[in-house]
Image (cartoon, rainbow, N blue to C red):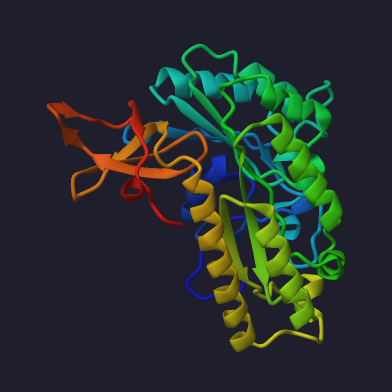
Length: 344
């Protein structure tokens, strides 16, 4: 292995065998390399998930790995191919989490929308959503990041057909320039993304859509950046995560010769964050003066109860007021005021 002071190297597989490997190192008294070839992984690795009493929302991981190979992303190389959790295991875990007192479950994964493609039975994300919302006691089901090309008609119908599914979707955009999207190996165009947004909003009133943007991708010109700013403004996102492009050794983009300077990336991040703030404020403005339901998630040291609405608007209210004391995992309905809203 050749790394001074290191006795054991583990990869992202066989984590359940960690104690066994440690014992082996103790017995044999020599360094061990337990890293497998990542593309040999065939099955989702089941790991026990502990219920955290202080958390209201519980994360349910249903999928691992990615087959997309965006040119900036190291995940397919580090985490391997698509592997879906067996539906019976995912559903059993969801029931356990609900029984443990979690009223909201968030489905997570790396390539979540492709859930089930590697399973022998006819399972996909749409079918899993339909089964999850049947669980007694589950109040909210929230979907984490799903790529634009993964919103099938069946999945949209599964989202629309249950009031347990939160009207909040995360759809990574990454760039508002078709030229840069092609360079990123993103399998959609701006027109396709815009059409999907319109389709979703026609079927889900007041839909909250959050997204990710990478600023300063190699070769991004001022024209590309301006296109991104204008496209993002037109989308009405409720929240935007902005990241400066960062090299990942081993990815194609890391070797592109036309890297953007750090100074320019920082300025473009600032430009996008300004657009993000305005976009969020405009979205939240539609709910000011209206009743909203909050799931209390934690009580902060200043005595505020903090939680989110189904649309993922963060709200804070006094933890104690009018003789009532709010606690985590409680649903509270309030009329939303400007001063109650958290900022991204």
